[in-house]
Image (cartoon, rainbow, N blue to C red; front, side, top):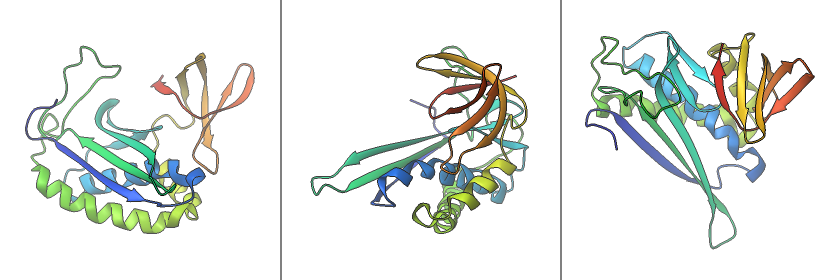
Length: 194
């Protein structure tokens, strides 16, 4: 539960793409959240951390979440959710990362105003994504704002930790890192910079 003054929004999409391309929506949503903050007049140095966080100066200012389920018809739906710390940041205790808010950075934004920009940006980015067919363009744009690209990161997976240089993304958005053991592709992990 967050304090009043932050933005929490979600949208449910039915059959937005083929199932194998749906994970690309996390990149669509990340870019839309970044676009919305910038369009709102708050222009801190926003970076996108793979796979689902937005950072300012290394501190988390927004988080993204996708949740998919199968419908009774056999088709599927994806809920795309975003939380942006407008007025408050969660306590550091109990979190994996440092956190901040737009208010902490000197920007005053009302959630409803930010939401208007978010919706517009999401529709625009969704159109570019084109049911997954535009994923290359989305990945290229995401990498322009990527945190840690070309730097050493730690990827904490269910099978332990991998440390290496964040080199690139695969065409479907998986993380590519060069470790001491060679090049690896990471499909799910908590990422730590530095």
